[in-house]
Length: 130
Image 1: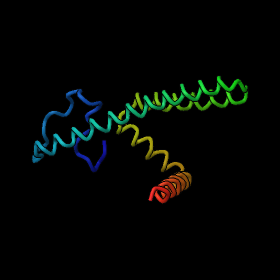
Image 2: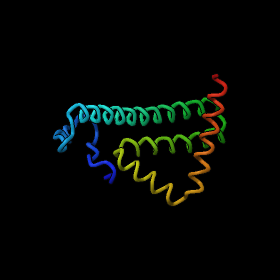
Image 3: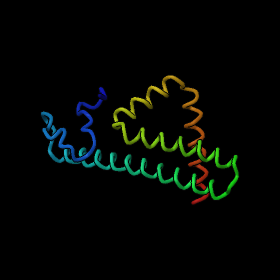
Image 4: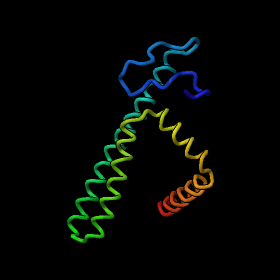
């Protein structure tokens, strides 16, 4: 549970969880929060499904190439993508957030480096689009 968010994660959408309002919470606010969480969970499921599709496409392209080294590398990458998809399917947003927080706390310099690289990549892509 997030100490800054008094409303617990309701779990996957349409479970009926957290239907009661907190004292002082307005129904429109509760409905907006529920809608956002449903979109977040739908996006998470879509991302997991896309990871599985990407793994299948990578594996198929590697087999088409016929190169043993390429096939082995594609198999390894595909397994990693499939593990990520299984993780997304099997964890709530709160669990994913907790795991990410723990990973950043255990390796802060690696997290900073990754964030920097992602920023550079996005910055270059936006610069090209402009």
